Every structure is written in C-alpha cells, then in structure tokens.
View 1 (cartoon, rainbow, N blue to C red):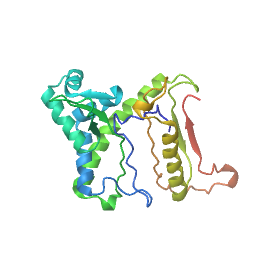
View 2 (spheres, helix red, strand yellow):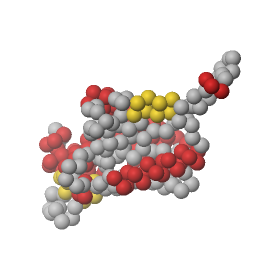
View 3 (cartoon, rainbow, N blue to C red):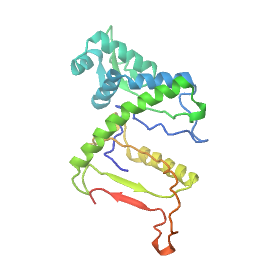
View 4 (cartoon, rainbow, N blue to C red):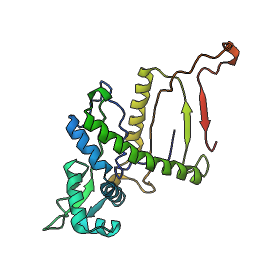
Length: 231
C-alpha cells in the first residue's frame, strides 16, 4: 500500500519494525536496549519533539517549549532522553553555555523475532505499536481525503499477492534500496522536496477453509486480490 511518503526521522516510524532476517540482525542488540527505545518512542512529548525537529531540522529546548506549550525544563529533559537513544544529537557548533541545539539522527532499527523478545520488550513494543497505529489511521483517512489524481503528491494503494518468504524478503530489500535511492536527509533535500510519510506492511493472510464444491481452473484468480484507490 502506498500512502503518502515520509522520510521523517521526525516520527521514527518511523522505520517499521519488521522481524530481522539473517542479513539484518536486531538493532539495538539487546532486549533491554530495545525495550528502552520503545518506551522512549511511546512517550507523546518525545514523539512531538522528534516531529518538530524533523520538520525544522534544528531546535533547542526554548524553541521546542514554545511550539509544544511545555516548560524549557521539561523539553530539556526529554531532549536528553532522546539523545540517550541516539535519536538526536547535539550540534556542537551552535551550542554554547546552557543553550544546546539538536538535530535528528537517521533512525536505524530492526525488531527482534518474537522468540527473542523478553516480556518487557514485547510489552513496550506493543504499546509503541498502538501509538503508531492510531496515527496511521488518521494518516490513511487524510490520504483518502487529499488524493488528487495519479500525478499528485498523495498516492494510496492496497495489494494482495502470493509470495514465497524468499521473494518477500527480496521485495523488502528492494523497497529499502528505493528509499535510499529516492529519499533525502533534511539537510540534503533538493528544492521542491517535501517531507513525506511512507508505511510498509506485509502480512500473511490466514489460510481459508477449502471451498465446496472445489473451484474449476477457469474460476481461480490465482490468489490475486487488488484494490486500487483513486485509479
């Protein structure tokens, strides 16, 4: 499903978790570190701060406090917590005295397979997932309402297709390669570029009961079920 595309470390959705394949090991490496990351990303104030810095590229506690209606003490605390998770970094050349400026770091995360997660990690991941799903629903409805044709900024699609696991993983690797090819970090974006939001989900559909009577070859659709919205 293509939804409006966003290379926004702004909301570390940032990068969907997807379970690790042999070529992509869990990151962060330990369960405790991953649980701490998920708790950080679930905090609503920290998510707003990431979104703000992702949009404006640089920020300090004062500018974030004014934008969010929080105290500078509160935003300074949350900025430090985001830095501890390597989600943002200080800009040394702009910082001086008690005034510290921050910028977004690329979000590099790979979820562990369920069998490798501790109970605390699983609970933290589920809470983070619920936060993101709520935002994704709003984004999907916004995409439907703002769709302006095949050549517009907003594109929405849903597809159903049979794949082997090897084909799915190859498809996912190609997807990531396309993001690297066509996406830009905030400081390198060309004129005319806009901050976009992309989501990728690939989920096996449970097996359906065998139909009766059995279908004939000419009635089979070979598993293809495609819904194109706006086309």
